[in-house]
Each structure stands twice: as C-alpha cells, then as structure tokens.
Length: 132
Ligand SMILES: [Zn+2]
Image 1 (tube, rainbow, N blue to C red):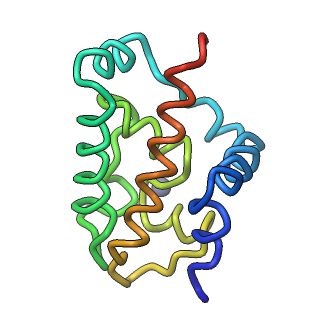
Image 2 (spheres, protein in one colour):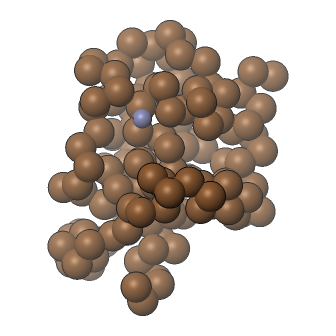
Image 3 (cartoon, helix red, strand yellow):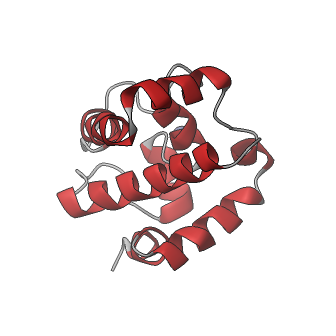
C-alpha cells in the first residue's frame, strides 16, 4: 500500500481534482501555466500526440529506479508536458515521493506510469481549455 496516494489522487477524476486543489496551495506549483507557444504546439500536434510524448517522458525520465540526472531531468519550459510535470509535482522522483509517497529507488510499474500520465494529461487538458 506504499503507493496509496497515487490511488487516491491519480486514479479517478474526483481524485485528480483533489490533487489539483492540493497543488493549488503551493505557490511554486501553481505558477506553471501553458504559454502561447505551448498552446500553439498542442494545436498543431493534437492531444493524442502530446499523450504519447507524455508516456515517453514518464517512461524514460521518471520510471527507472535511478533516473538520469534525477532532480534536474525536467526543463522548466520547452514542452507542455514539462510544464505539467512541474505543476503536478511529477518532475522528479524526489517530488513524486514528497507529494505522492512513491518510494525512490524503485522502478515505476506500468500501472503507476499510466496514472501519472493521466494526471499530467488532465492538467494539460484543463489548462488548454481555460482562457488564461
Ligand atoms: Zn522535482
């Protein structure tokens, strides 16, 4: 049950809303938003492609037991998924552990990866459909 916060905050729409309310209390997390360039990129690529990029980033940069450059593997800008990762505290294994109690030093299961991707994509879709 060590990943229980993932189950609570990433599995259902209601859980994700709870996660967003929690993240909104963080000044650092809540300052991330999609830029005009991010929106343009999403409009050109489409959400399905963004989801594939998201799956790829999570699998390669977050899922390994010892990710390369852990703590500094997610740029602050340059891709909508990077913004989502910072906004959702899924940027590195340290933040994942602090916010979701996902233990470091252990590879993320495909199920855990999918939950993280679902949360990140929910954040992107929500931002994308808002006007700000
Ligand atoms: Zn981090």
